[in-house]
Structures are given as structure tokens and as C-alpha cells.
Amino acid sequence: MKKIKILFTIAFIISILSSSVFAVESNIGSKSQDGENGQHKEEIKDKEKCQKCRKDPLKYLEDKKQSIEKDLKEGRISKEEADEKIKEIDQRIQKIKEFNSLPLSEKKAKIYSRFQKHIDKKVSDGIITNEEGQKLLTEFKKELDQWDGKDFPKFNMDKMDHKKHG
Image 1 (cartoon, helix red, strand yellow):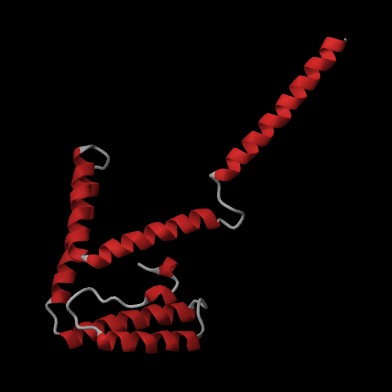
Image 2 (cartoon, helix red, strand yellow):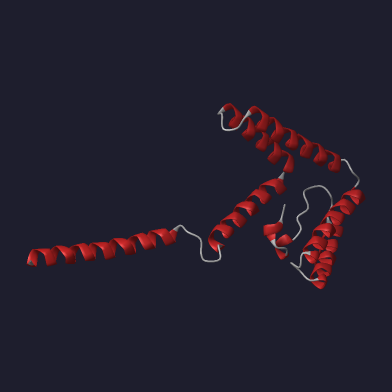
């Protein structure tokens, strides 16, 4: 009888220790209650992707095209899927080239118009107030006026919610 008590005690201690170890392990890689951990990783990934794209969007798109062709050769995607993605990339490259050929005043007007639409959507969705939107537009306009049009504009977009970029 004493041996059974000892075995049950050992089994009980082992079960308690192993369950706490599993609890700790499962919490390490999981999201927090509101999903911040995974969301933060996505924001970092999006921000890094955005920075690569901003440095040289044409090079970024060409690299992306090569990546798709590699995936096709390795059989990760179908020929149709690769053709569709490459077609979209080619269209984006063409739009960038057309934009680059515009005079500076037209470039600034297009950029401001697009940013204004973005802000209007955030206001209408209730993400920011109208006053915040107007302040962002004013600040953006000041920065845009200083842009020389040669490189990708380096605006201080940290004031904006980066999750909605795209």
C-alpha cells in the first residue's frame, strides 16, 4: 500500500510539473489576449516590406517577379497563378514609369490627391477625426512642397497608422 501511495505521489508531481511546462511553452509562441503579438509581427513585416519598396519600387517589383518565376520553377505555384501575378507586377511597373515621366507639379498633385483620399477614408471610417485629418493633410502638404521629385518621397508617415498602408 505504501508503494502505491509513493507511485501516486510521484505521478501527481510529474503531472503538475509537466502541465506547467506545457502551459509556459504554449504561452511563449501564442498571441496575447488581444492578438498584439501576431499583429505587431505583421506590422514590422509590412513596415520592412514598405521600406524596401520605397527605396526603389522598380527594383523591388523586378525582384518580386524573379521570386515568382523561381516559385513557378520549383512547383510552388501554377503557371496560371504565376502569369497572373507577373501581369499585375508589369502593370504596376508601367504605372510607375508613367508617373516618373510626369512633370514635378503633376507628380505632387497625384500624390496629394491619393493621400487626401486615404485621409478621407480614415475620417469616414471613424479611424481619425476630421480635425486630425486636416492636420495630417496640412503637414503632408508642407513636406510635399519641399520634395524635389527625384527620389521616392521621404515623408514622415510615422504619424499615420502604418497598419492601413497599402
